[in-house]
Length: 395
Image 1 (cartoon, rainbow, N blue to C red):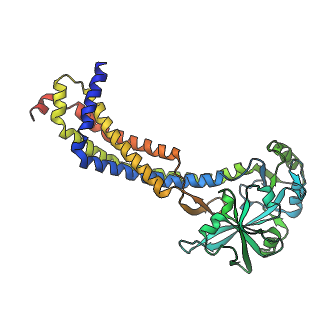
Image 2: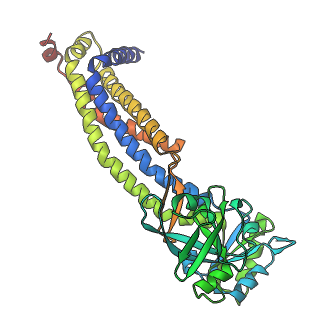
Image 3: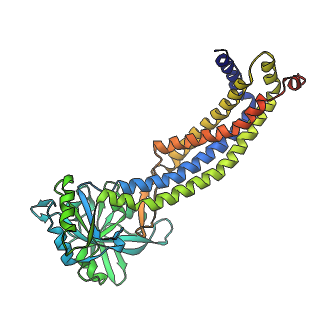
């Protein structure tokens, strides 16, 4: 109890004396806040991209690709194979027929609104069953395209990020002209970064013959997955891979998340070194200014460990303040900020919003505390080892 009492008393004195070192304390807080802002902002890109990709998909929806393909870009099969897939047991059916949509996926160039430079935009050829396969997708402006025509509908995120993708606007890719007739919402998923048109028209425009790259299908129930998969994998006329839609898009986000997180942590660590040196200077200055005070406490019988704890508490307190300020500013400035980036697994742009999540804010605060602890550790040890007699001579 004596040690606890001493620690509380010395820490109280230390915290009350912070007002005498406002300048150096503010410098340390600003340095740590700056690191947390950068750390949080960069990692919020990965979080936003992950949310867009992993928020896509329904466990009741499956994607069929050619065996060995990990993306639609590397997949492909003929129309006859697409028909065999749609006839397999386990799929949902309605008055309009089976809920399966053979689809074609191509990349077209289109200028971004902010920079005007061309970016890769995914143009997806779908069938009328596409909206039944994706029940969360709905037209929010204009109408659905008419099958057999050069009409397209545009995802809401794509319309916000790319120039000229508004209802009624004409666009041209290669030898084909298209008319935007609608804008669709997909509940914030990656589908909102796409443009949709009739699959048969897209086949002709890009000379793909009667071929597709994937089949999106809706199961009768989530538990029908194995029935559907077994029917296809046992069919000798097919060479395919079946994957649930959420799992597919989760895999698509792995590469970019890893790259962004690696870059984010690297930048944050480099900046943290500067912030730690700033904290070191602040705490060394604090110890130097309190030399006589610490010596007096030691002469009165206070142990060295309460002094160590008091210095560390001050350093960590300053870092917590810096972490809270940095996290708050990052949340205000970046959360919800709309942008687009390249998905390196499909080589197309994905529009998404930065996501400053509670978990990310907690990580930033922990990072700040670590910086504060490292910045206060050596000054705390120096304070504990301060010779009492030498310090008292300064009285």
